[in-house]
Length: 472
Image (cartoon, rainbow, N blue to C red; front, side, top):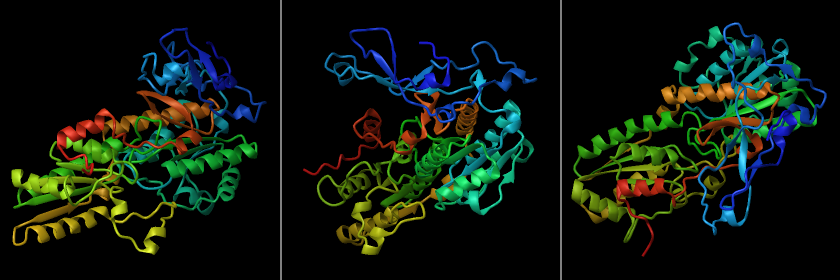
């Protein structure tokens, strides 16, 4: 299949050779393009061809026919769903530079904004967007929007250049500042028009990506020549479709320090328990990976599993056994675990943060209290210690490690190449080890929960020997 135009990238199905034992078609996800609603836009040769420092080698440009499969593990048995239903395999356009672009660098005015909570690597992404636009494509008008979405209409943008952002990748947080909430669609798009931005790069989590969907739709409705690209950011790694979000591996690495400290505290006490609460509102990926990496964790509790404290097969019974055998135990819990176990007032049941999320109660602090009550009730006059560690803000605020810095660089460059090629309403991300473009609307609503039926969770169970919490 040879696709030669931007429109061709949205073809629904591309046939692959017939094979009686495998699926026979590929469904290429529709990737929005500026020419979808501005058909008179003319393509230009890629400015990289005239770059004095870099000469693209053969095979440098991505063909429109190159795709990344969303699923690479298939069951080819005759009775499998993939074979029996003959359903096409979902694929995404491969990320990277195209031979033709739809922006003249001298006319580009780019905006970069960071929204939501902090995450390791945010400054790296900003830096690489600036450096990539400036050095690869010769863009000289690059601006940072401060204070998140509300910064579009409430603050003046700041001019960015490679010299200014040179060391930003060494810093935690975001140099552009961030905030939650403040999303006013008409004010934001009006401000984008007012400032003359024609490329908008939005860095944020799932809530931010839902806002990006609305911005893209409104720009499309107004038929504006403005491309919107999202770069998904969530330290929890709860955004679906992509392999992982940037900052996740740094978070897992930093979580080891908290677990190590909890282990030392627990091991140094009589009947000591080290309790660590890690980030993860709706998913337990950080807790899971930190547990597998540590080997010192005796029990890992995540939002995806049900568990109970009292009775046969419960947490207390398991911990009592661990304390008798080893004299100590280490617990790792995700912040979203056990929320339905904590008593709430009616007001607490309705309380929301600025992003519209339900405000969670501190499960770690509540569990610490319950552990102490249990021990005082069942083991009066016996020594017992619970050391509770919550490293949330320490983990969020650190600079990205080497692996995440590399990922941030490539995901930023991928976003630039996509926007220059005229794509809009997309995010760049890693799918099965390859960089791809995904419609932002799909990413905004996709969740990445821990699959407790797969091998990875089985590995956790084998490492910790924790109960399955299935009541007899």
